[in-house]
Length: 81
Picture 1 (cartoon, rainbow, N blue to C red):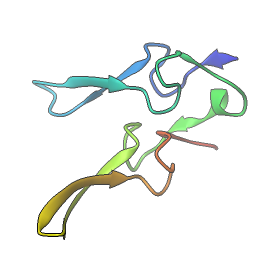
Picture 2 (picture 1 turned 90 degrees about the horizontal axis):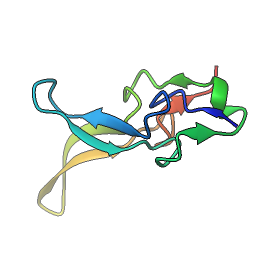
Picture 3 (picture 1 turned 90 degrees about the vertical axis):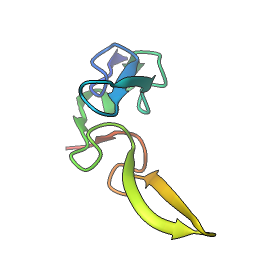
């Protein structure tokens, strides 16, 4: 087991604007603060900045979707090097 590279052992990630962020559970470690190899040497996903979701302003059934799971990291928030 190693320290989660996504939340740096905090268990949560900041999401939202810098002036008013909110904490969400880390998608990589699920608040346990640790991950098993090979995820302990992974890097934060550059597409979603470790959140696991990306913005999507498309319409589905007449409503704005808002966000979808990141395809690069598959929602984990980290990618293997």
